[in-house]
Image 1 (cartoon, helix red, strand yellow):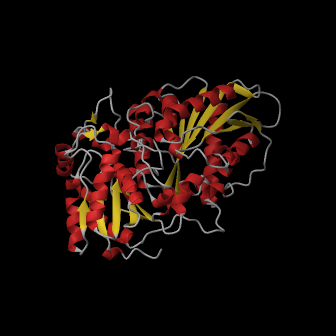
Image 2: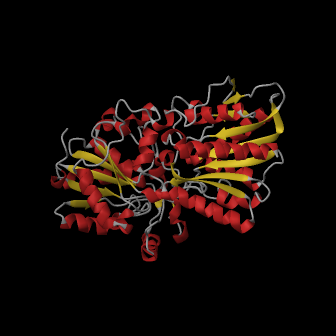
Image 3: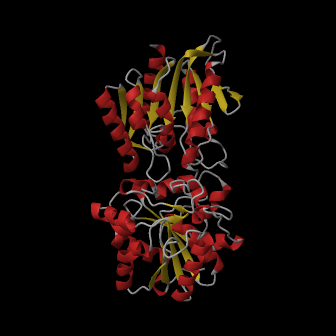
Length: 495
C-alpha cells in the first residue's frame, strides 16, 4: 500500500478510559482548521449501562467510522486502542491506518485491556463499574507531565466510571488485523521513546515483529500521557504526519548488529562457567571460597527473547572480568516481563542469591549486587533492609522510581524511598551523561534522598557515555568507567 493520502482521510479519535469525546476538543479544532474531518467516539461510560463491555465500545467506534466515510484514520489513546483495533479489523475496507497514541503493549486476539495495560485500575469485588481516579491519582494512568492544574482539574471533574467489562472482556481480532498499517505516537515523559522501542524490537521476540513491519512508523510528542490537553498543536501535527504514513521505522538495517549483542567494551578472555537453573557462575582461578558479584539485568523484557540476558555480552563480560580479578561473577535470568512482574522477578533474584551464597566456591558473607537499567526497582528491597553479608550495591544507568502509568505504585520497588534504609550500605552508581531525561530524573531524586538521610553513594560520572554504553560506546572513557566501577565494587568486598 502506498502512503495514506492522509489529508483526504477522516480522523476518528477514541479516548482513554474514564474520559470521553470532550478530551479531544482542542486537537479536533486544530485538525479541522487544517481542513481535516474529525469524529470523536464517546467513552464506553457515556450514556451506556454499567454492564457495557468492550464489544459495546467497539460498536460505538464502528458507528463513527461508518459516519466518517471511506478513508479513516483511527486513533486509540491508551485503553482506547483496544476498541479502535476491534473496529479497524471489522471495517478493514475503510480504515487506512491505526494510530497507537501512548498505548502500552500490542493487543492481540484474546487479550483484555487489563492484560496489556497494567496501569488500569482493577474492578473490585465484582462491581460492574470502576470508579475514576481521584485528582491526585491520575498519574497512575500515565504521566501527567505538561498538564496545568486547570487541565488536571478538568480531568477529575469530567471523569466517568468505566464499565468493568470493557476492561476484562477479551479483544477479538482476525489474522488480517496485523496487516493494518500502524503508527505509534509516543510520549517520552511516560517512558516511551523511539530509541527504547527500537531496542525492544531488536531483542528477537517474534511477537514484536509487527513493530518492524514495512509501513509501520513511529513519532514522538514531547510530553506526558495526555498530549491532547498538554500539547494539542503538536499532537495534531503528529496525527497528520501519521495519516500520511510519515515517521521513523523501527527496523534495523540488515547488516546492523543489535546494540545489546555488540562486543563488550573491554577485551576480556572467555572463562568457563557453571550453569545452575537460571544462574551462571564464573569462578576465578583457585579453589578457595571467594566473594561474589551478582549482575542483575534490566527490564521489562519480552519472555520470548533469544539469547536471554545472561548470555548478552554486557553481562558475560562483567562476570568474566570479575572472575579474572578474583571474585565469582554471576549472571542470571529473571522474569521481569511486565511491570506487574516485579514481585516475581524479585523472588528470582532472591533465589539466585541464595543459590550463589550456598555454592562451595563462594564466600557467602561477601556478596555484591549490581543492578542495571530497568532492573533498578529490584534493588529497593535490598536497600531498605540490607543483610549483613551484602557488602556493596551497584547501579548502572538505573531506573530508580517506577514509571508513571505502569501499575507499580507504592514503595516496595521504589529505591528513592528505600535508600533511607541503606545508611551503612556502600552504593556505587554509574551515571551516564547522555541519559534519557526521564531516567536521569529518577537518579537525581535518588541522590537527593540519599543526601538527606546520609546514605553513602559513590557516583562514577560517565559524561560522554550512553545508556548501555558497555556495548554502545567503545571509547576510552567507557573502558575506564567499567574498570573504575569494578575496582570500587571489588574493593568493598575485600574491605
